[in-house]
Image (tube, helix red, strand yellow):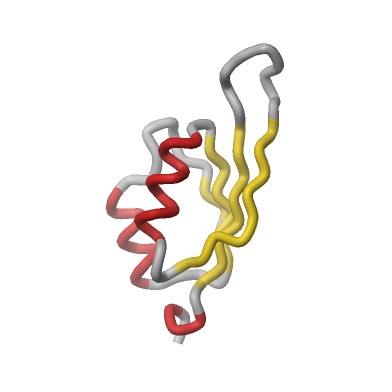
Length: 78
């Protein structure tokens, strides 16, 4: 599943749905590292963060895009 939420981050209903029926893998694209960190925290237990890669698409600004890979924990998909 590819997620690219608005700057405010994932809606609580989306987090709940992902925890209830976790896909094997998530790719989360974020324009705000703080909301990415918050979402990863909310998904902990159902998913494990495996990779994070920042991209400086807007040089000489404070903005950074980040792509994170999360994989479902084994007990979450059974």
